[in-house]
Amino acid sequence: MGADTLRRPTARATRPKLEVADVIRHCAPDYLRDYAPQAAHERVLRHLAACRTAQLGGHVERCDRCGYERNAYNSCRDRHCPKCQASGSVRWVEARERDLLPVHYFHVVFTLPASIAAIALQNKRVVYGLLFQASSSVMTELAADPKHLGARLGFLGVLHTWGQTLTHHPHVHYVVAGGGPSLDGERWLPCRASYFLPIPVLQLKFRGRFLDLLKHAYAAGRLQFRGVLRRLARRKRFLKYLRTPYRQNWVVYAKPPFGSPQQVVRYLGRYTHRVAIGNSRLLDLRGGRISFRWKDYSQGSRQRVLTLEATEFLRRFLLHVLPKRFVRIRYYGFLANRWRVERLKLCRELLGVASKVETTTDEEEEAASEGEVVQAACPKCGEGRMLRAGLVAPVSPPNWRIAYAEGGAGLPEWSCDTS
Image 1 (spheres, rainbow, N blue to C red):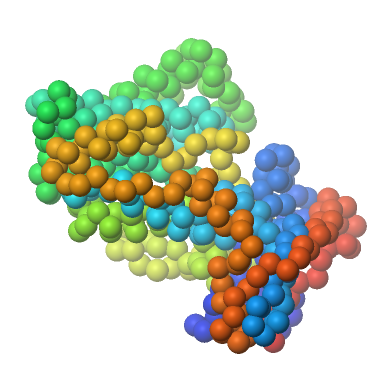
Image 2: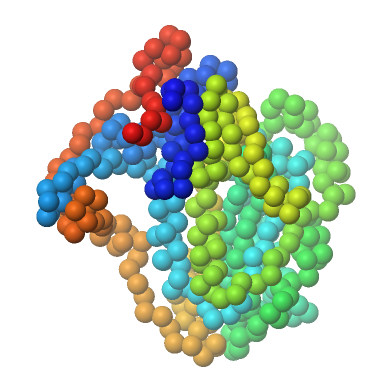
């Protein structure tokens, strides 16, 4: 098989044969030649291409029984990396299980219309922040209204910015406990099992709250406009532009409640650390074109295949790079980090269930993972444990800009031949 052809892995494979990192290694020079990416985008490309390779260094693992050795290379820990985020999801799920309450949980989604998404693409930090602020505040206020529930909610939100075909589609997923303490903290007020809050009211309040916040951000000079949106820098044109989203029905929906609290965490584990596209969806790369699977929700989640130029694939992938230090998983109400422990204790008292024993913190878990023993059995004898036996020094990565200027000279050779 030639170096330009990558095929879908067989069912027996333990990991995808084709990864986003492979597409980057092959096609980043062409992408850099055709586009003028931001420094943050180039940094993501470098991180993902180097993840778990000799470029980042690592350590030697040796079996304490048969002496088998192998190199284990370091992860890039970039939050846009499919490989790193998959392992992060497992740790996050374990940490969140202690926050579960024996109640129904609802999945609520707030989506920005396309006209606002265009502004968001040029003002990610501001507009994504307003999406969280508007959606979380209207849920909190509506639930606190005695006409609806009269309770203090607890929920967490996860920002996603992509659609199935990697287009820009900003929306936030919330998982909300079905009820909460009364405003005086004296009793637990549950939601009905099949009903959260009135969706039409949420839609209207979300639209009004978000657009009001957006106008305040504009007045404060926090928004920038480039390219086709440059005309919006003039106030009259900006306000005229907002007439369309004011007339639109904004998408807000609540899915049926989960079967059990444990299903909530397992479900969220697939959402919290998800990146724009996972390696398992990639099918084939040949002739500078990549094919991947996607779900067509308009046709009952029918599986389809889309083929794009690899440079266009990378352009779409990088649309979803978040601003530095932007928090994409946020906690509200009685799950807010500031008072989570004491308010969860109150919730359990009101529900008449025992408080859970605190487990190790994320920092303690990370410190424990840096010990000498690697949590893996020997792949050769199957009986011994793999111990850290030494370090592997990092090597210098290739210079992509020099490589594409020289017609590809200096790029690392790569082939999917796994024989």
